[in-house]
Structures are given as structure tokens and as C-alpha cells.
Length: 295
Figure 1 (cartoon, rainbow, N blue to C red):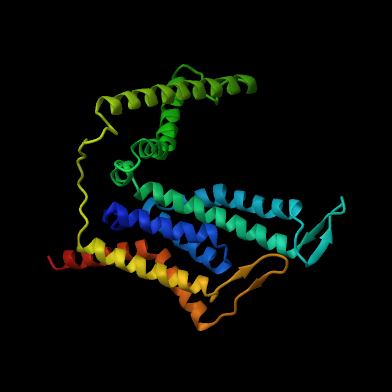
Figure 2 (tube, rainbow, N blue to C red):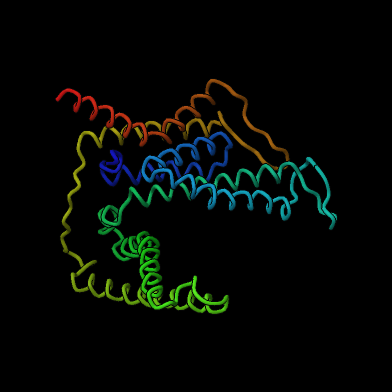
């Protein structure tokens, strides 16, 4: 049981907006490292060791590819390292920017993976169903589309396997034809399912004025305390960034702030924010074990 998922949906959404927003729009190497470590640790807690495999064989190659491609197409920067065969220079700054971009991509993908596990479709509908009903329904369907589509492909592939038409049967061109057949069947299912969902929501008067909504969520003192903590940490982080206690410049010359006490404070606050869900879960696990030992 994930303790952080048990908080109010507004808490969950606010947390992810702060953590992902800082990682996306402020490519500071230290913040990116803390963000990636926190997201991977939380993802491992939620999904187990398979997260490591996904990172090593999925996100890591994509990040390395971005790190390599950026210096080949971006030649900004004052520190020349060497020249390519076509005469274009490769600069230290472009390499560092590629590294930062790759880590940022890994952070965002990892956090959104956790976001999908915590922010379920019912939570999203609860937050935005009244404000933007059409868009919230669309986003909710998109969030659950990938896992449902993947599960349906597995079912179709298993059914096709029974009649010898899976991607492992036949010659290369036959395997490709079988794969396209499976994809076609699954795509048709997805389109039909979306039409049925739209008709179902319309028949339930979704989006009409005056329609009431059932909700199991209540904003209690525990939620208020955590919201106050998130707001305080966010204000301190923004104060540290806007006052340039921490700063980063990739072009024309790579420069970064010195390790001052104020910078260490900002790093510590953001690191604490990144591991906050994990700390809440660990504290709850310790509490639960203590209660069980007292029985």
C-alpha cells in the first residue's frame, strides 16, 4: 500500500507539478541528479526491480542517444574540443547541454511513470471534472490508454498464437504480416472502445451543468499539513532560484554557482522534496511494524 497515494488528489497533483516543473524548466545538474535519484527510488518502491530493467534498456539508451546527437547538431559554445569531418566543431558546452538534456528526459519520463501509478483516472476526474470536463475526460482516457492498449495486444497475440499467427511463426515477411494483423485488431478495439466510452459518458449527462459527482476524497488535517509543507518548500526553492543562489549557464561558456551554504540549503530542500513520498512510505512501514510487534 502506497502511503503517498492515500493523500488527497490535490496533494498528489501539486507535488508532481512542483517536482516535474523544476526538473523540466531548470536544468541544473545537481537538481537533475536529485530528481532522477528520487524518481527511480520511488518507482522501485512502487513497481519493484523491473523499474531498473526498464531504465537500463529503455530510458538509458534514449538518454545516451540524446547526449551523442546534440553535439553533432549544436555547435554553440566557446570551448572547442575537436572538429568533425565536415568541418563543424564539437564544443564542451554542447556536450554538457546534451548530457543535461538526456538526464532531464530521463527524469521526466521516470516521474510521469510514477505519476501514472499515483494519479489514477478517478483522481484526475475528481480534480478537473467540473472545471474542464471534456479535457479532463480526454486526459484521463489518455493516461489509461497505454497500459490498456498493451494488455489488449498481449491478449490478441495469445489468441493469434493458438491459430499459428503470432509474430514468432513463419518466415520474416509472414511474421511482419502477423504483427500488423495484431496491431490492426488492437487499433480497431481501441477505436470502438473510445466510441463506447463517449456514448456512455454522454448518456450519464457528463459535463452538463448541475450534474453532481460522487467522491470518496476528503481534505483533512493530514492533507492540510502536507500542503503547507509543500507550499513552504516551493517558496524557499523559488526564492533561492530567483535570487540566483543557484544558477546554471551552458552557453557560451559553462558556468555554475559555487557551493555556498544557501546553495546547499536549496539542494537539500529539493532533495527532500524528491524523496518525500518514499520517506512517507518508510515512516508508515516502520509504524505498521511497530504496531504489529506490539500485538
